[in-house]
Every structure is written in structure tokens, then in C-alpha cells.
Length: 420
Image (tube, rainbow, N blue to C red; front, side, top):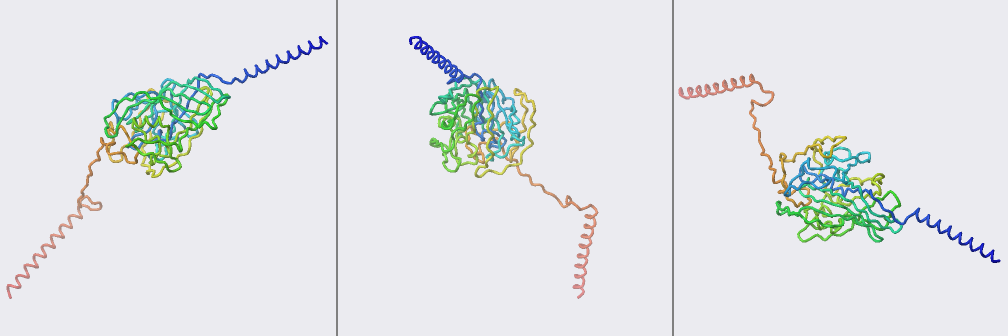
């Protein structure tokens, strides 16, 4: 009996050890969390940031890195100061077949088919995205948490740089109750009533995007796409600022801390609904996070262009600058700037550093431009088509004969009266 008990005890112990080993192996095969060191972040912010601007000859666009400080507002970026890559940051442009290619400066002025961008507020856009690699952090799919950091800077330029800001070192923080993309904003304080105001702003931590937590699942591999919250988000504009319009299907706003910074930078109305033609194009675009830059997740197709209310008629577009199939970011091709509708293009356009969305730029926005004088051309009968020199000669002789006949009749009439 003692031997039987010993045998049973040994068998139970062996089984327990075996179960423990299997459970341990299973836990090792499916860890609760894992680390990543080459995550990729991809985002186009919104459609408006890739569109033709309302001031003649200007565009809204991205540049990798931080552009050189022009020293004052109202100065357009020089083509040689634009960059497609800077460290772990690069720009890609969506092509007609849905794939992405490294950006060129010329491409900031064309749509995904290579045609010139349509009018401001039309929804026509260049389809660019900012891509940042080398992100590191941890992901816990079981707990639904993540913390991933990227290092790098990109610049967002409005009106070709009349006003701009930078985004540095984005960070994705996902908890059980929230998901946010954070970053450090930089730029210059401006004032539309004082175009010469250009004061550096201190680096400011802000929420770039709030991602809906409900429905967000963190996979064990690959990555995910997520669309930030925008519609229905309220923003209380400061006194004297552009009102936040809360009507229509597309009203909303970027996060408050983000827009508060834009108030100082002079571009706040481009990040919340303000009742203008561009409102449908301010909505935040999807964010793509890939755990490995070597095996990235495909970004979703962008929404089709949606014309806004009161969309202006598209003007005749200039010939687009040619795009090199193998561009060199450090030496981008010089673009062909479209001429202003009523004035010749000037070398440097000045504008108020703080801009407010409008289909017609403020007078000070194009103060450096003056309408050319109207010249009226006067033509004589000799310049009329179908009239030859011989025609003029016989007309002159006929007129002379008629005058002589009239004089003779007058003289003859006088003589008759005298004889009576």
C-alpha cells in the first residue's frame, strides 16, 4: 500500500511539473508585452495642409526638418530651403495608383495625378504624408497599452511660409482609457495687425491628435491605422479670434492645446471649422503606426475631395513644373510659380504674418503687388482692315469736286439775283 501511495504521489508531481512547464512555455510564446525599436509613424495631418493657399501663387505644404528662420513674417520659402528628408523624417507623395514615392518640391504644387492643384478651398491636394522612422517603445496588446517615441522634426508651412510651425519628437501614448499623439510645437508669434511681428515661441508640449479609444485594438504584430477625433470637438476661440462655427456635418476641431498654440502662430482658423470654404478639408486624416519600418502597414486610401461651401471657381492653372523620377532632396527642382491674377509676380511677397482664411486675401497680403495701368489703344481709319491707299485717293478727289460744284452753284445763283 505504501508503494502504491508513493507511485501515485510521484505521478501527480510529474504531471504538475509538466503542466507548469507547458504553461510557462505558452506564456513565453505569447508575452503580455514586447519592445520595438524601429516603429514608423505616418500622417498627412489634414487635406488643407496639402492644398493651394488663398493668397495668389502660394501653397500649404510640409518640409522635413526645420526651415531656416526668415527673420520676419510674410516671406515665402525658397525652393533650396525645402527638404524631403531630415534624419529619421522624410516626406512621401501619393501617386495615382495609390502607392507612395519620395517627395519633390515640384510635387507640392500638383495633385496625385501630376496636374496643377485646383483652387484654394476646392479639396484638390498634393497627397503628401510625413513619415518618421526609428521609433522605440513598448506595446502590450493584452492590456491595450503602448508608449512609442520618435525623434525628428518637420515643418508645416501655410501660404508658402508666410506663417509656419514645427512639430518635434512625436510620442504615442495609449492607456486603457485614452490614446493620444503628443509632440513639441515651435514657431513664431505673429499678429495680423502688425505684419512685422515675428517673436520666437518657446517649445510647447501639445496634443497633436486624440484617437478614439473605443474600438482601438493593438495587434501582436504589424501595426494599425486610426482616425483622430475631429467632428463634434468644440473649441472656444479667444476674444477677437475667428469664431468656431458649430453647424453642418463637418464642424469640429483639433485638440485645444494644439489650436491654442496656433492662435499665437497666426494659423488657428485652419484647425477648426470657421464657416469658410475649406472647412471640409480641415478634418484630421488617419494616422498609421507600424511596429517595424521594414514591414510597414499600408495606410488607408484618402477620402475623395469634397467641395466646401462657396468653393471658388478654379482659375486657369499654369504649366506644372516637371518632376524628376529620381529627385535629390538636397537640390529640389525650382518650381514655376503661377502669376498673380491682376499683377506681375514680385520677387518677394509680403503678407500679414497672421492669416485668416478667406477666399479673397486681405489687401495687405498682396500689398507688394500693384495692378498694372489700363492702356487704351486708339486706331485711325487708315489702320482699319480692308482700306487701301487708292481707295483714299478717289474719295479725296470726289469730295473736292463736290465742293467746287457747290461753290459754282452759289456764284451762279448770286449773278441771277443781280440781273433782276
